[in-house]
Length: 431
Image (tube, rainbow, N blue to C red; front, side, top):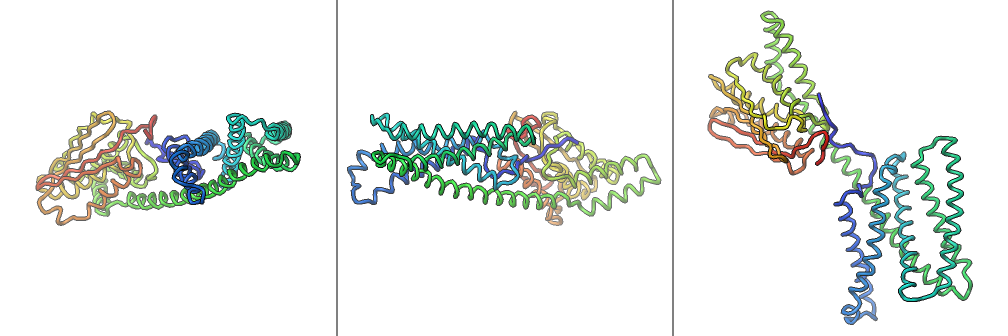
């Protein structure tokens, strides 16, 4: 039986920054933070309406540009290295490396913005030139050393290359930080004022980035574990519901097989095979989807079992030629609806009845209708069948979200359940 896993999760707590919605959310939060930063000084004594009218928007644009560059570069690097981070032994290492990546990008962006500001204002700063030369020299020496040392380790011990590159990035970040400190310490006395302003600007940015990054990464880690627990709980609940099989079907099927063993052994053997397949389908992993063709095959096996006792009273009409056979759906989506039709309809009517399954496909959405006869007092006798329908809806929404719909229509002699959900297949399981 074909199947596909619902969610192929790496064990990384970070969301995928390659997704547009995640990037948009990060940009929105960054813009809100920039707005707060610009509003904060308004409580000071020297800020008046003149500042708001003439400089507020300009400051907001500059601060927003600076923060957005940090956010976008961080998102791009974390997107690029996501597969590498997921190969680390634990989320602790992934979090630490992500933290250093963000701080490194913050420091690099701060240095570039300080240099661009000097160019725009027209300041010729001796300190800036000496400072950048000192940092570049240290980073060059560190990079050359890392290439030699890590290259030897890689070829000698065959350690994962991606992990070595990430560790190298962390080391270079530390080198950059110590270079900043040492550059300030060796600054000549006449350039101390410029160095102090630069260091204050850099430390302020790194301090804000360090605090915010730690809070955000912690939030993502907690949310990741909450999401895993929620999904695990949902799977466990739905798995338990899916594994339930009605005792009446079990006993009726076994009795039918027992009678057939003496009368028609060949047919009894076929019935046992169908019965085994049905049990296997009922115990299938809820995280696996099956193709529509496989689900129809399970339904046909079930109907063959029921026809052993209902014989000509049970009639079934399939109008599903329009539905793609490779469409992916949760296992036992149609079978419980057909079983409801047999249990609450056909077997209660003396002359039997017809169950009709109709499928429609418009290129994007699939609609499945299961119509069955219903005696006038059936719903009063068997009110519990709503549990099975809610089970189906829960499992559909586990895969398709709120794009999955269910509608139930009940008339005096007809009961119809309509399912609607997006079309997905093996090539596009999440489109």
